[in-house]
Image (cartoon, rainbow, N blue to C red; front, side, top):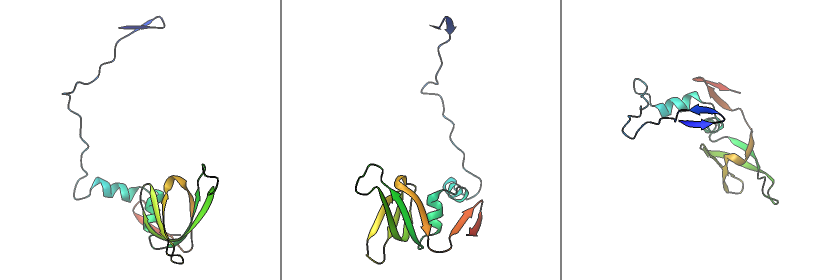
Length: 123
């Protein structure tokens, strides 16, 4: 027992090394948990993936930089991941790897594809 602020408290108990840890179960059928996660979540990277090949302006802020405080990258979405966006600029031939933490927003030059709750929509 521990005495704190005039009260007695029992020491906490923790599981020992031989206590089994429950494992997550797989969904029924041939659906993997990864595909379920990708289909159900409408995160920015998933929306960008749905619009791969489309022309965009990516507005980016680098708060610690004095030279590149705010920058706009123009080009075509090549790839998008959880923490990055890859854009190619067909005019200059440059490719840009942009970290998502610096991405403010994306402006699309054409209609976008958007999928939420298993139904695909165009906006």
